[in-house]
Structures are given as C-alpha cells and as structure tokens.
Image 1 (cartoon, rainbow, N blue to C red):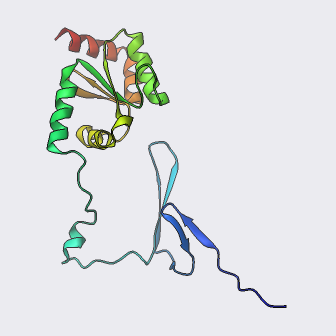
Image 2 (cartoon, rainbow, N blue to C red; image 1 turned 180 degrees about the horizontal axis):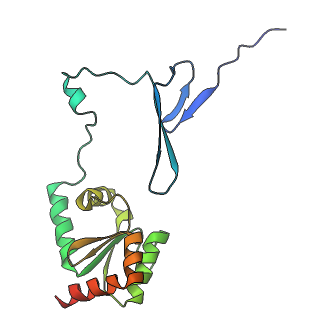
Image 3 (cartoon, one colour; image 1 turned 90 degrees about the horizontal axis):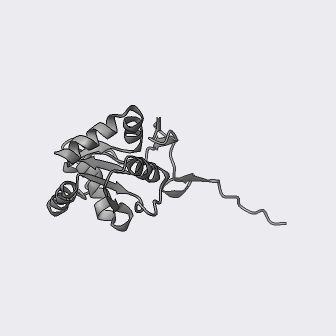
Length: 174
C-alpha cells in the first residue's frame, strides 16, 4: 500500500487562497469594526515588503488615483445645485434598491419634499467620485440647498427631531 502525501491546509483570506507553506508567522494582529458593526480582521505577515524610508515607494504606499476628476467635480457641483434637494441613492425613488435609500425616500415623501433622485448604481465613477466629493463613504447621500446634509441615520434623526423639516423649508424658501 502506497502512502499518499498530504498537503497542509490552505488559509482562506479575503484576497484569495494562500497555501500555508508560503505563509510566515504573522507579526501582528489587528481588530476593527466597520460601519456595519461587523468585525474586520487584519493580519500583517512577514511577506509584507519592508520599504526603506528613502525610497519613493515608502512615502506613497498606495498609488490609486482619485476617482474625483475636475470634470466630475464640476458635474457634481452643478447637479447638487440644480435642485433644492438632491438624493444620491441606490436605485430610484420609485424602485429603491437598498433599505437605507428607501428609508430616506419615505422620509422625503412623508414631508412632501420635491427632490431629485440620482441612481449611483448606474455609474461606478460617479459612485466613487461622490464618496470623495462629500467625504462620506456610504449611500444614500442627501444634499439640501447645495450642501451635504447626511446619510440615512442623520436624516432619520433629523426627521424625528423636526430639524429636517426646518432645514428643507429654509432651503426651499431661499
């Protein structure tokens, strides 16, 4: 009877599958919670390249370019200022594709607020650029009077306290 060689188990990481034979012992572990209160585990292994401080790559670890081009910034400014109330959301007011977007739509409908809805799922560049433009990472994003008001949680709190109606009335009357 021949003996079979058994491979060591693989580690499954968010980036894919890595054979445990090439993974060194982790140097450190970090634990964080994202905005959905789900744990995120980050493991830094010895495979991470060490950069010399004098190398150009040591200063800029991420070479990702900005999604917010000057043309997109101009377009967003025009769009945000084109109506008194603009909602960037997943889906449309008639067919929201996210519970948070639906909540904000229902709040605005409850207040009888005329608003422009923009489906950010139709354009990935718009979606990423808007995150930089507002400095807010999630959707929906509500703009009132040309200024960023907030996401779902902020809008809901403002609605419950009566603040949202006051802000909308001031914007519409100006």
